[in-house]
Length: 267
Figure 1: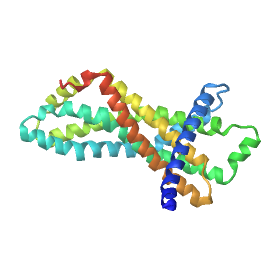
Figure 2 (figure 1 turned 180 degrees about the vertical axis):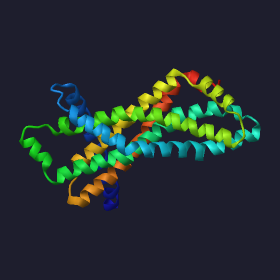
Figure 3 (figure 1 turned 45 degrees about the vertical axis):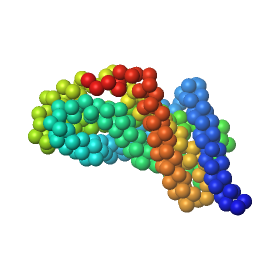
Figure 4 (figure 1 turned 30 degrees about the horizontal axis):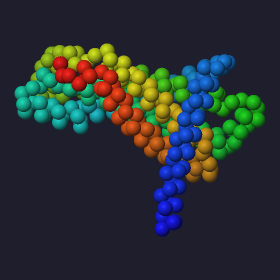
């Protein structure tokens, strides 16, 4: 019985300790980002372009697939059955702008850029390059974590705008495939859309990007056990990032709807 209790207690304890360490890393990263000197510019540009190059195509494909497939086709068939295809645009504001655009960007960033960050930092940790930086008087957080943190925090909202565009294109394709007119789709889309909804999408995406960066950088900085340990760190980083994305999405959406009741009213 004691062994069983220990088996259940230890993973929970380690998980809580990891969450606390990630929060401490987040604080160190923010302090290092705002404190001079700001010599991380070249690394920030490299990481931004690296994540952009890796993520733009999967993001486009995922945006179209998620909006046209599991959501758009089923909702379109249901509305067509009721003779209310003109309401598809208003529903797509909720589907794409409120949920799918930030989620698709977060999933792509975690699965593509986040894993690359974890593997890169983990390999450096295994080769003791991070210890060498500390010996040379270089802060690994400022030189390595801050550029990755800022790049994902800036890039994810940018991607969410493109995810919104291609997700809306998925709604247009659903409308056309059901033989309906595109005009009513855009009429209800822009009637339901609001500035608060768009700003919330950008803010949620930025929070997702920052969370992914912190989780993946932490797992890379704490990797151990050779190449096998790096692979294990990448796997754990993706799992924790997805859990964090789902938790943040629920809390953020409930807070948004509680503070903006007008978003619950169909228009």
